[in-house]
Amino acid sequence: MTDSSKAHTFLYERIAAELAEQIRMENLKLGEKLPSIRKVCRIYQVSLATAVQAFNLLERQQLIEARPQSGYYVRGPATLPELLDQDALKQTLREQLPSCKVVTAPFINEIVAAARDPFFVPLGTATPAPALLPLKSLQRSMMAAGRELGPESCLYELPSGNVELRRQIAQRASQSGCRTAADDIVITSGCMEALHVALASVAKPGDTIAVECPLFFGILDLIASLDLHIIHIPSHPDTGLDVEFLASVMQQNKIAAVLAIPNFNNPAGGLMPEARKKALLELVSSASIPLIEDDIYGELFHGELRPKPVKAYDSKGDVIYCSSFSKTLAPGLRLGWAIPGKYQSLFEKRKAVTTIASPTLAQYALAEYLQGDRYDRHLHQLRMKLKLQVQQYTKIILDHFPEGTRVSRPQGGFVLWVQLPEHGKAQILFERARSEKISVIPGSVFAAHKGMFESFVRISCGHPLNRVMEQAVIKLGRLVS
Image 1 (spheres, rainbow, N blue to C red):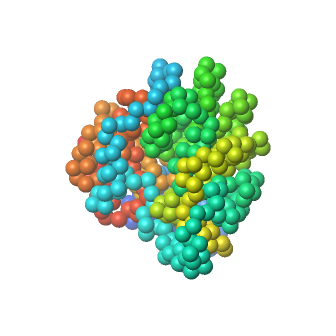
Image 2: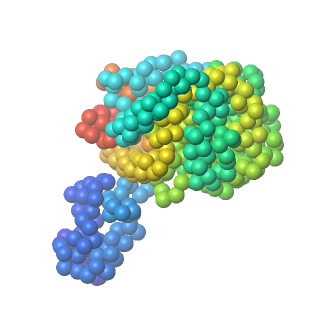
Image 3: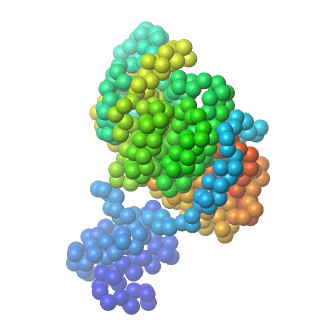
């Protein structure tokens, strides 16, 4: 035993100290499975109860975590430095009032091109690696759908979408607390089309909408294309949208809609507590303002239970709920959906004149795939892998980026919001990384106002941390230095 373990009185404490030392020395690495409890009993010649006490102590110390029907694993850092002074962010946004038009960053095309270039290391792409997706199973469903449909696969589907697919989605929505029927759902070409149709249904050019800050740059571009104005509402990296700030903005400005990502905001990763979600719904409902809810990351939670969407509390139809399968199954399917609530008629008309209908064959194939428990089994594995990858990338960043680097601690999804040390410039890092064939996303594109988040980058953890990915992160750290 190590010297540190000899100081403990009880046998289970000594065993826990020995295992903790192995973790500290990285003989047991982040994400690695620990020996089983019965094996620990044999190694240390102790009873089952003593071994269980040792593992319970390591859990309380947040050094390990239990995974159902799998065992115990080394977990990531328990605490991380706080990101960005939220009071400073609020003050900045107050100074930026009233609303403004969105101006697309001049280098956004370069960012997107680098993120999608197969010769770049994909630290900027917010999609899971193909190796994590059930591609063979989806291919079988696609082939089965093609055989079953025949010539009908070339015809238009209903504007609202395939009936069986909508029924499957309605069943899944009920599991997250949303009381909805197949007829309440509209299939879209991904979540971006759902958001596009939602915004166009409730706001006209020149109207002002309230959005989170920071916010995914693709949504900001969408808002710009619709000629809408925005007011930024600060989003905390832990607790999400600041409802109190939104309330003060609504008192002084005419808002046509609120767009929010309550479950795992992209890029900051915030998860709104249930009480805040209810407060948000009550606020917009009392003002008769539609809430457009983007829940694309909702299924990728890292905890035991799926967090409810705001839609689960919506009894009046004030929430237009939007999501897709792009982050969980395959981005290339381009299938999402909306539950438009009281705005369904407007939504369906806008969908019909936008794309008429979403792809027929893909809808049939997805409906076939969702039958049974294949999707749930896949999601269970995907969540565990993404959670581990987020922990692994976090550790590599903290180990190899300069002192003073801060990293978000998302409770779901797979992107990290990284704040560089003082004077660190994300735009310079982006340019240097691009020359090294590494894609990252600079923080400035996640806000409409100039000069915001210039020391931030978004790093995707969607790919397993193999040697290529690890060396790319280490190289980023050197480039920052």
